[in-house]
Structure formats: C-alpha cells, structure tokens
Image 1 (cartoon, rainbow, N blue to C red):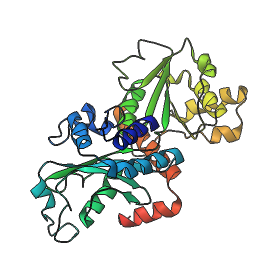
Image 2 (cartoon, one colour):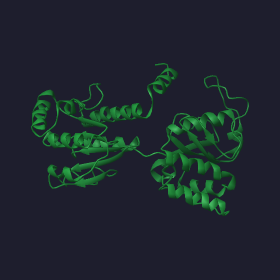
Image 3 (cartoon, rainbow, N blue to C red):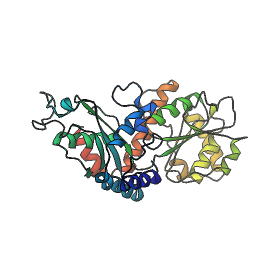
Image 4 (cartoon, helix red, strand yellow):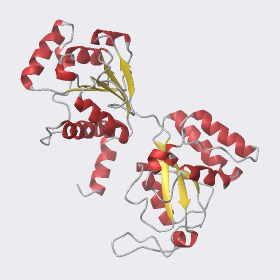
Length: 327
C-alpha cells in the first residue's frame, strides 16, 4: 500500500469521480489472493469502487493517518454477493450470538480497523459486521467465509518485515515460499546463479554476488531478520558477521553443534564479540523434530512469525490473546 494511492482515492472522491483500486496496492483483490475464491476476483475492487462516495473520504483519511504514524491498522472491504443472505441471521448452536440481524446492509463497502479495534466506516454496521471487521484484520481467517451472502478481505497499512535468506540452499527455497505466504518481504543472496534463480525463488528479490565477501556492499536495516542458510554452511561466518554488523533484529543460523563451534571461531577471529555470537539463534527454528528441507522451513518460518508477534505486541497484549484462546 502506497500513501500516493490513498491520496489519489481521496482526491477522486472529493471530485465526485470513481477512484481506481489497483491490485498492486490492494493485493487482497489480486489473482494470487483470489485464486479459487468464487466470490472475490480482481474485478471486485472496481465493483466496490463504483459504490464509493464522498462519505467514504474519512475512512481513507483515517487509513492515511495510520500509515503515516506506523499504526497496526488495516483497510478492509465488505464484499456482498447475495444481499438477502448477508442480512439473514445464520447463527447456530456453536457460534456466538450477534442478535437477530445478520449484516446491517445488503451493500458492500470499505472500512478502517486498527489493532486497538477502532473502526471507521460510512455505512451502518451490525454487531456481527463489527465482529467480522475486527476479525478480517488477521488476513483471510476462519470467520471470513462464516456467513452466507458476503465475505471480507483487507490490506495492512503498515510495512512488512524484510527477511534476508543468506544462501540459496534447498531449505532457503522452501523458507522463501512460506515466508512470502505469511507476509514477509524476502530477499535471497547467493554467489551461484545455478541455485539463485526464478524457478527456485519466484517470489523473492534475488541478489547475486561474486562471492560472499561482497555482502559488505549490501545494507540491511536494524528492523530486518536474517536467516543464515548457505549451501553446505560454507559461508555461514560471512553471513553471521554481516547480520550482526547491521544489528539485525533477529539472526538465526542452521547447523549442528560441531559446525557451529567452527563458525564461532571464524567469527571471533574476524571481530565478532561473544555477546554478538550469543545473539545468533542456533539452531534456527522452533524445535519439533524437523529434518527435511520443507519441515525445517516450517520450523524456521514459525519462529519468524513468533519473533514478529513478540516485536509488535506487548506482553500484556500477548497474554490477553493467549487467554482468549484458552492457552
């Protein structure tokens, strides 16, 4: 999502024109996100745009402010494909009761929702609408398709975390696909084009270096995550040194204890402190017996998700969330 896209939408509505909701800024309507979904397609974005009016300007203005402030917030869309069914009450004995009314209206629309559960929308919404607007901020969820006649989608108004995969190994290939799927921005670095190619990393940014000493010419941000996954572990020391020099928020390295001791010695010889070494998660990933590249990727990406969760939410918020799940 770009600020410029929101500004253009606001200007169009102020001028009484139908705005453009491009899938590059609203990927929830893109071909990849809607594949196999019978109710949302790329055309749905413009169908919703046709119904927007000047009354929706405050929703987009609030989204713009949230983006500028770096809030955890989302711009969401209510998509109606059967108005009568959308307004019907279809609660059952399992679901929480939201009153006799389903959705308050038979029309779709746009809304803003923050992690603090602030909602801004021009249209009337029911208790069940409120529940689903809050829920869709997780992205596609089990409640998005809960009720007949309507569905929901959203786009985050905050930036994604960049994950660096140092090495184009088989594990890195699996990690790249999973990390992209759960919302990370993935960059892969390797020194061999035979491994670092579009076929193995179709969704990631790819940086081909002559050798791993060229990492020093690449910048990373302190907010980035780094996974050291070089082929055969041959360039793990260069990867660890580069990540710690850039003070990456998270650094993880795959490998066994014996290999890690060798990497430690090489890193210390090249200026790494013991404190920096201890900050490297070894071995990378959550512990649950993963062995194959695909299994290891699940363990690694699960850990990245957990690190991101703890970074974004306070301990109090996390405890409240875990309690709500009964954990």
